[in-house]
Structures are given as structure tokens and as C-alpha cells.
Image (cartoon, rainbow, N blue to C red; front, top):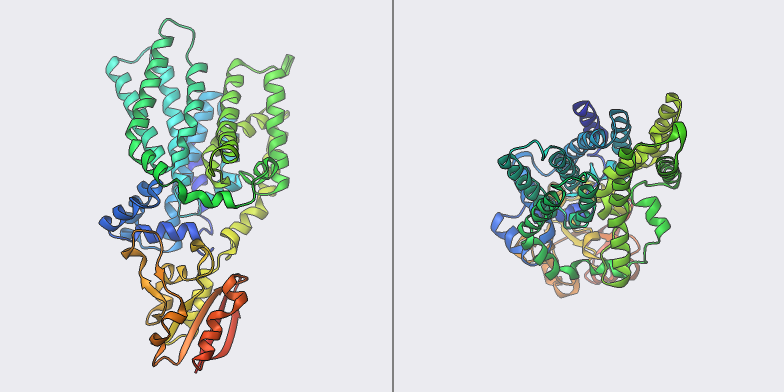
Length: 488
């Protein structure tokens, strides 16, 4: 059953994952991974250290399989399959096989899961690590009385290593340590060796955090990198409740209703609806796993420093699935459970389809389509100018590095230093009016602008080119990118 559900968990996010264009965060992944190892290490000393382990793995993956959308997103789809199997195994050990099956099916249908499984970022891999870390912890707690000393030491060492790996892949795995503490408290019976087990867990967790100290220190040094979160409108609890995991209001209402049903029936059910102590412990852990990281980031953003993004709570999706699964499992008769699973599939379908549209990534990224427009009309020797007035992760020039074949033979007029020759993530550029002499001998220029940006509104670059004798010949709007062809 884990293998079957894991395969399904891979296929659902993998289907159509290659259709949407890359977007800004994926550009950071691909462009970082394409650097040489020395240049990648140098970059991580200045920026994105928290993603260093993922970038390093992606570097070798790209060397083997290339940098297409299908290739770079494939590891995430595989990771969702692994996480789906892990969710089943964890829920089966916590409660029962029937709850585990339902929970695994819910997990692979969550829009947050189908999104992270089709993205060249570390969220899916980190989620797979933490769910199997929970499985390992539960196994240690249940077998420690019958294991030899050497076996126990080996298992706790494995726990430390896996915890450290999770933190290297995604720093906020640290927020799950209190959840694992609850695991230990609830699944360590009142026996003479209880304190010894708790001490063993605390020591193993401390060792795991110690192993991850380098990335924790670098994250603190580079915390200004996510300061932009503080410039965004604050995320309300209601918005987080809908979009953090569920993607649309209808699915969010249904899911939270099932979680509430689980809470009422598991904690307050009587007679035939009475729950076992095992059910209560499982739901307690699932709720803590869902709510502790979310509350920490939301409150921390308000009181301390910007730290919350809805994508950051991807690591909580196994707990969401188990909480919803416990609610579904309390329904009677059996056909009601089947009907609710079908309802969840129906409610998530529009979000799933939108995620796999050509502009399915963040805010409708369209760099592949914009690159295709340029490739269809440009000739070797033509110049290309990019809108530099938007934040780096939205700049149209990222299309140049993500789809280089479309720009082969074109002259990047405003480039000062390419990204892989800088200590940061992106190219360094200069304003067009500083380098107009580079257009000598050029008869055609392609300008890519972000629709609605300051440059697009002011038209400064276009006026500069017109003053040099260029005339607008054609304008093409893709989704959020405007491609303007000018010729002398």
C-alpha cells in the first residue's frame, strides 16, 4: 500500500508539471545550480545559504538531466511520492490502516502539495524528510525497550542526521522540534525508563541542531534577504487559513469542517462515537504540527522580524492530511467517506488545473512564452534590452538565463557582469542611456518590459531608443511581459 500510494503521490504532481513557465524562485534555483561548485560556495557566503544543500543537489542533477522544467521539477514530484508513502506509514502507526489510506489520499490532493511537487524548490524534499523523521521517531519510541543499546544509539544517530538534513533543506524544520517533543511525551508510557527516553530524544535533537549550526548561523547573518516580506501587506489569519494549504475557499471550508469534526468527535465523542486514546494522541500531534509553526511565523512577523510566507508551511501538509483524514474516518457509513474524498478531489480540481496552465506559476510568470516570441522574430546580431525597474525575481531578463536558446546570438546591451561572476543571485546591469554607444551598428532592438512596471509606464528606454533613430515596429503582450520590436 505505501508503494501504491507513493506512486500515485508522484504521478499527481508530475502530470503537467512541465507546462508552466519558470518563475522567480525557480530562477534562483536553476541559476544558482548552474554555477560551478566554487562559485556556488562563494555565492552562498553572501546570499541564499538556507537553500545551499538543495542548490548543490540540483547542480549535479542538472549536469545529468539538463535544466528543463520537466527535469528540474522532477525531484520534487518524486519527493511528494516519498512523502505520500511516509504519510501513510505514519498515520498507520499512529491510528490505523483505514485512517492512513484516507490521509495519504488527502495529502496528495492538497493544492499546496500539488504545487510544491511541480516546482524546482526544496519544499517537497524537506516535507518528505520531516514525515519520515516522524516515522523514525515513532519507531524508536516503540521499540526502544526491546532494542539493544547499539541499535538504540544507531537509531538516535539516524534521527539526528535526518533532523540536520531537514534543517539544511529548509530552516523552518526547526519549528517542528516542539511537535516532536509532543510525540515523545505522548508515546513514552509512564515507565521507569521514561526520563531516559526523553533525555535520549533531547540529546539527539540537540545533536541534530548542532550539526545544522553552520546554516543556522548563515541564516541569521543573511536575514535581511527576506526583509521584503515586511513590505508586503500583512497576511490575515483568514487568508492564511484558505491559501496556506487549500488554495481556494471552497476546499478550505470543507477541510476545516472535517478538522473540526475530528476535534469534536475525537475529544468529546461518546458511546459508539467514542475515540481511543490513540486517536486523541494522533490528533493532538497533527494539530500541534499544523498550528505551532504557523502561529510562530505569523506572530513572529508581527512582533520580531519578517518571517512568514504561506509557502513556508508546506512542511505541515502531512499533519493537515492526517487531521482531515481523522475527520473523514469518523464518518459513517463507509460510502460517506468515499463521497467526501470525491468532494475533495472535485473542489481541488480547478486549482490543480490552474497550477498546470501555461501561466500557472506565481503571478502568471510567462518567460518561456516571451522567449518564444523573441526567438520567432529575432536574428543574430539584434540587441535586447530588459526592464530593470521591477524587483529582481520579476525581471524579464531572467528569461535570458532560463531559456538561453531563444536569445542565442543576441546582444545583451545593458549587462555589466553576468550572475555567475557576482557574489549575488542576479546579473549586474547599467541603465540603457549609459551605454548607447553599444548600439552602434545595430539595426534592430528587442525590449522586454514587465507589464505595469515603472519602466513600462514611463517608457524611458523606448524614448532613448527613439532618440537614436529606432522606431517601434511591433508590440506583443504575452501575459505580464510586453515585447517591443524597434528598428532603425
